[in-house]
Length: 283
Image 1: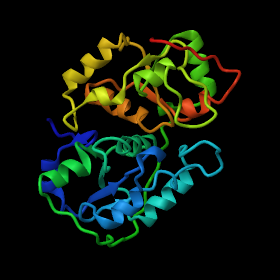
Image 2 (image 1 turned 180 degrees about the vertical axis):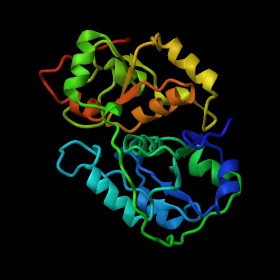
Image 3 (image 1 turned 60 degrees about the horizontal axis):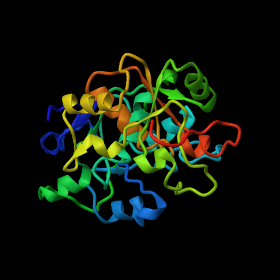
């Protein structure tokens, strides 16, 4: 793969840069309840040396009833300062699944105007499989100020997504599995209707991976084209709760499509609104 410190880097790249003074490594492991795993507990037991734990549920908007919504700028800045992450740092984010929740944190940093941030391709599983070093030591933290310039065009709310669905001037792309998209499989969160946003199309995030790593930019583009997505239109990504939707954003960024945004509430919000239309079946 081609390493790009603004999107995706290999384990080889990280190994070569692991001791760089301005590298900041974040473990952003997060799991669905049915996965039976705890990211923070696993981090305490084993992580890549120097990593800090980024808690997606904590660094979020505590005023919202929806899970891990984008935090206020002030909260993001204060939490990252306390973690010793700030201006001038090259940030690399990984997770314990390979590429699952790390892309959400990559997207969140981009939303906050940070450019030098990448996801570790293959994540902790690949790093460990290659016999690379791990430890259980907490990092040494030194405060670093972070300048935030929020990129509002990168996030969408329910009103904006509803408007886009009616006008059909965006491609709304759903990262959930085909059965959940079609409405033939019940949602893991109680109380949500089954189905998808009318007019949206389905690119299951897992189809963007091969053997635990992200496919090449050419292969990624082909996946989107095979789903009949018009890449000339701006894209809005969605999923269950705004986590795997970010994998679609990362994939598009890899093949040069930059006019994408993420629907933060995703299906957890849309599926709970009785007045919003729901479609079922294939796209």
